[in-house]
Length: 440
Image 1 (tube, rainbow, N blue to C red):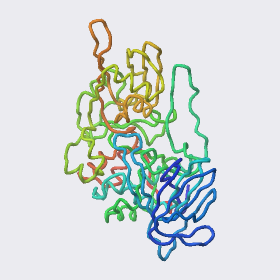
Image 2 (cartoon, one colour):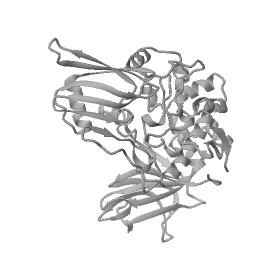
Image 3 (spheres, helix red, strand yellow):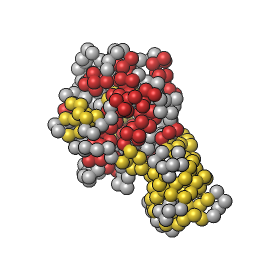
């Protein structure tokens, strides 16, 4: 375990051919020169070219490190940051950040733009980016401890090579994790944790939450917990193996998101009954006052998240599957869940067509394949409408929840806080048996 606050390398842009920057205050180049104002950077023949606003070249080398002047530097701004990549809320924003800036060559024609910043300052932005800054203090404390624990656990995990299961001809099982990033610690988007720098106003409540929980981690078995979180579990949290490796953690046991326990989903009949009903749960809320307090503006665009429905004609889904998977299934004939987690999330789905059959997993890959962006979750049941000759006309997916469903349910945790639960109680609810420890 750690005993001091680390510095974090966060990729703001990945594999980018160019970027536009604005430095507010002075930043030092490796040769000691100070630069400020509007700049641009591009990759050319394996080197990076930093250019001033008048077009004059400032420096050209494979890697460029910009250190903020402690007396004058306020922040740097990246003018075109894409957020929500491949999700339905994807957009481009201008974002500003504190700390140092590293421009690192990725290939002959692209580079990564990396922010180097202390963990606690990084977390203040993460909490404000993930949820609205006006959320209840108890929830913000719980979110801070969860995000801090996840990040440091991931830094340790990056030391090991991620191994995917051996692929079979008719089965594709894959998942994304922080091990995918080799030249930096985390990215700044939903793949890891949302990080929008000082663009998101750090409220007094967020600052209090970070200060009150500084250096506090969820631990289990003498290790920092791999403390995952998501937007809405849909009434039941899930287990680690539905989304990632086939391993289990005692603190990530699937549990009901309510004081009264519900049995886990164990069959297709139970999945249909569960996902076509709206049982009581902390995250089952339509209270717009609460949602406006806890969700960022672009998340408020997603109105139905506890229970939702998506319908496709057969031809629409055939086109989506071909575009997203690269596989031509021909005439689509059937979608059959092969394995579900306790929340009802599918982690192995059989897709049958006239030209072939493939089993796909895990949960994020299923969500990616079955939507032009991503399904809100893989917790869904399928209704197949057919013509009189048996030809499929339409697929209807009745689903529940938003995200992978493992660990802390953000909307459920926020509602718990509104109802008077403290951070310790919220964390105990979502992370079974985990122990809070202050490590620095």
